[in-house]
Amino acid sequence: MIIGKFDKDGDGYYGKISTMLMDMPASIKPAKRNSENAPTHRVFSKSKSGIDIGAGWEQTSKHGNAYISVKLDCPTLAAPLQCNLIEKDDKFLLLWDRE
Image 1 (cartoon, rainbow, N blue to C red):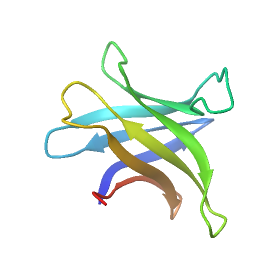
Image 2: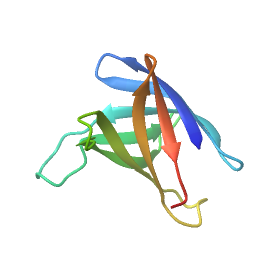
Image 3: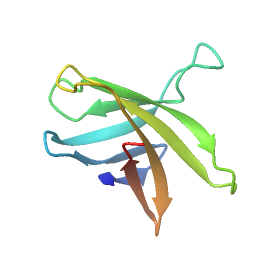
Image 4: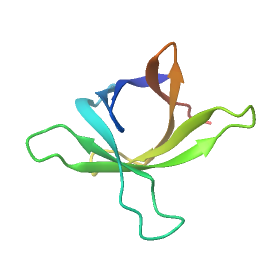
């Protein structure tokens, strides 16, 4: 299921995350890493406060395609959402699957 659509601008991604309970502009930006396992990206709401709502790790699929594994979390969610930011037709889609 597509829960977000993003455009790439420089080294970040800018777009919108939309679910039944969430509809917000968001950005996915490179993170400063202090360890090898630290996230490569941070996810922010584009509200006035720019709240940190998640993290992402650069990955490569078994077919050799690059993507970002994203974990979204905030107090309004019952549990964190695990999703993937993939490139398709010059757009970047945030995909979620319950499984």
